Amino acid sequence: MDNDPAGKIWSEWYAWHPVLPIDDSVYWLETVYRRESPEGFWQYRSFRPECERRQALIDMPVCPGA
Image 1 (spheres, rainbow, N blue to C red):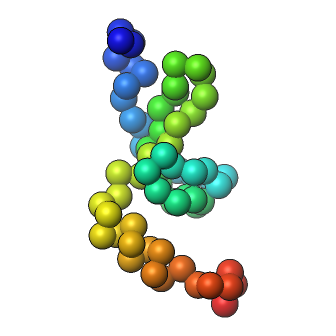
Image 2: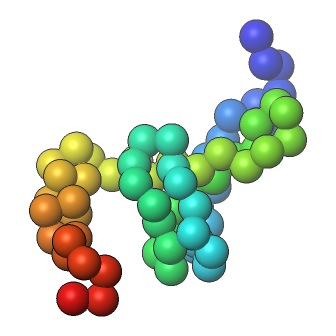
Image 3: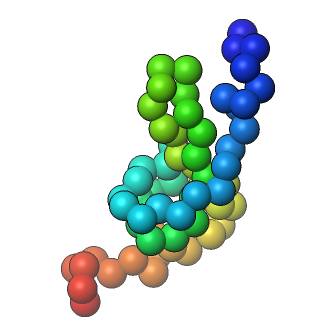
């Protein structure tokens, strides 16, 4: 088990470049949460409820820019 408590804490972060949270679709130019994995890579998470995720997918245009 990981004994580093700082590695388990998610920090709020503004996604100024596209990121793929482990629990959602691509985030870009919006707030997401991140933490550093034991391997030294950043992990991202949205913590967005399932109903909001579904609504965001419905609202996404089929053709980007439409």
